[in-house]
Each structure stands twice: as structure tokens, then as C-alpha cells.
Length: 129
Image 1 (cartoon, helix red, strand yellow):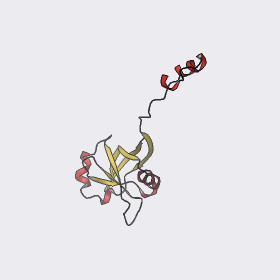
Image 2 (cartoon, helix red, strand yellow):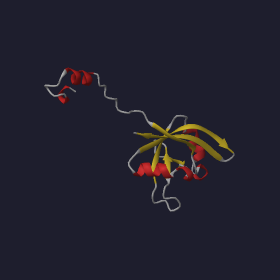
Image 3 (cartoon, rainbow, N blue to C red):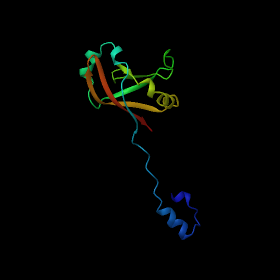
Image 4 (tube, rainbow, N blue to C red):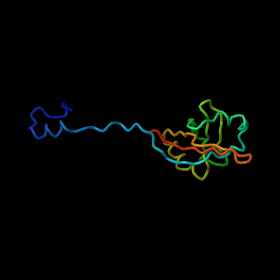
């Protein structure tokens, strides 16, 4: 900070700059959305995968812009690159735009439970800023 203050600066300017505290970089992730994973009924092997999905596990979000049924599609994968499902179509537009702009998004598993033949996986989606 001293390099920014002219050598002949008076006491007031010097005292103002000596008390300036620069903010620390924002290091926390930004919570964006709570939702559920779509498409788990179509995920091959979901029954075998379910015991390995733990609360708090991180899921990777991967854009699929060439998806013929949804150009805003976002797949969800485990860290081992096993497909879990998709971000629901009704909630993926803004997330897709953020990802297309280079933002890093991820999800964590908040809850999971079987509802008949559907594995309901509640997730929280975050952006790393």
C-alpha cells in the first residue's frame, strides 16, 4: 500500500491509507438451488449405485448442449464418473447459461429415499466463484 501513496503526501492522506483494509477474496461457494435429480428411473444400475450415494457426496454437473430433447441439459455424475441423472428441465436454463459462461457448478446430496421404483435424490447446487 505504501507504493500507492505519493512520497510527498500529507498526514491526512497517509493516515487514511494506513487504515484501509482490503477485503479478502470471496472463497465460499454460492448456494443456487435445492432440487431433486431427474431421470433416475432411466439410469441403468441405479439400484446397485444407490448404496454408494451418501449424504454430502459431491456430484459433478456436465453440460449436454447437443441433447436433442433439451439443449439446456445438465447431467449429474458421481466423482467416479457414474451417471446419476439430470438437473430437472424446469430448473436448468439459468444453470446452463452460467456453465456456458464458464462458471463451475457442483451439487451435493442432501437426502435420498426410495418412492416405489423411483430413487428420489435431493440435491443442493452451488457455484464456485
